[in-house]
Structures are given as structure tokens and as C-alpha cells.
Image (cartoon, rainbow, N blue to C red; front, side, top):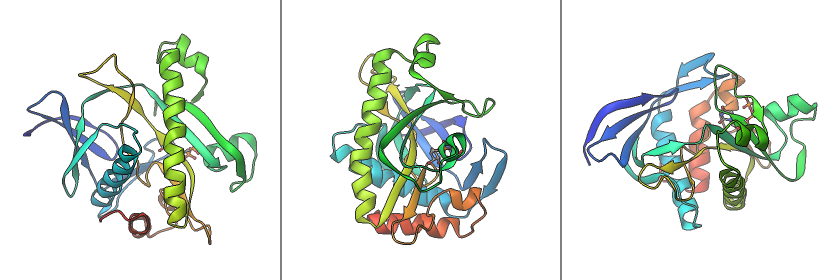
Length: 240
Ligand code: UDP
């Protein structure tokens, strides 16, 4: 597979074409952003760490029968992925109340939910990713009713794999964000998981001490961000 021109530069990853239109190279940079791009920095080693954690997690999901766009690791910072047409919404599952949910409903961060809560957000930095419901998504044409059901069901299935995986590593999986799409060579097939699963897109708390091990270390200026990301990788058994 030959790497070709840059296709898209996001806030933390750059995507390159390959000589096969069905595949892309996903390059994990050291850039980190928060608050819809308002806070930016470079964290030495983040690209490498996230590339490896993502590969490991996607592998575990594949073992559990959950398909993703991840194909294989190419090098320290790059992975080969299937080219996708993404659904423009973000799927969040929460096991413990934190972040925007704590703020929106005035509930203490750390409240353990009796069962997981699913939320949809529209993917739009300009609009600050507003919370949306099934009707918004269906009526405004961002996804069909069937795709809505698929996204909910897949996001809950991911929870049933990853919650115990992190729990065995002494980590609470508090919440996380997933994105889905159709591979461009299978536009009418089932939705599959796209984007990434790394400490940039989830909340992970040490189960004993409550210490934050995720991007909240950057958002809240807690320091030693990458040291904690690496600790997550090491504990879940990802080869770093
Ligand atoms: N999240 C993300 N990208 C976004 C918004 C949220 O990866 O654009 C993740 C976030 O890291 C957290 C979960 O989704 O693990 C829920 O985020 P929340 O709605 O609480 O928003 P936040 O407080 O992170 O802005």
C-alpha cells in the first residue's frame, strides 16, 4: 500500500490517500485540542501512544465481533484504515456522570448511573457539538432510523466489551465518544466503527484513587498528560 496526498487534517490526526481508494492512512500527530479547538498544544509522544492504544482497543473489539475501519498498524504513528463515509453525529455512552452531563443537569461528577446513558451530539465545532435527539437526526436527514438503532446498539455493545476490559486494569470507564460510518466500498452495508478509541475521546478514572487518566488532564491543566495515557496503555496490556 503506497501513501499518497494529504486528504484531510483534523485537530489531532491527518488522513492520507493511498494508491487504493478503499484505504486511507491515519496519522496520529502530537497535537491536542480541547473546547472545540479553543485550547491547543503539542504533547510530545501523544501520536505514538494513541496510535498504539487505538490499535489494541480496535483489536479487542474485533475479537468481540465489532467491526471497525481499523485494518493494521503501519508504523509508530500511522494505521491503515478503510475509507469511510461518516455519519455526522457523535455517540456518547456514560457509565458515570461527568463533563457536560454533570453541568447540564446539575448532577455531581462521579455519580454512578444505575445503567448506561446514551446521548447523540451533532458533530460541529462551530455550533459546539449540540445535544440532539433521534428526531433531529432522522428528520434533518443526518441518518436513517435504522442507522440510529445501529449506532445505539453498537455503542452499547462496545461498552459491554470495554467496561470490563478497563475494570480488569483497575480503571473506571466513565464515558466515551464513538463515530460510525459506511466503508465507501460498502455504502449499503452495516455501519462500522470509525475514528478512534484513545484517552483523547473518553474519560478514564483510576478505580481506587479516582485519579484522571484521560484528556481531562489537559482540559483542566493537571499536567503529566502523556505519562497518564501511557499508564492506561500499560495497564490494559497494549504494547507501547
Ligand atoms: N468527547 C469527545 N469529543 C467531543 C465531545 C466529547 O471525544 O467532541 C468525549 C469526551 O472526552 C468524554 C465524552 O465524549 O469522554 C463525553 O463528553 P462530554 O459531553 O461530557 O463533553 P466535555 O465535557 O468533554 O466537553
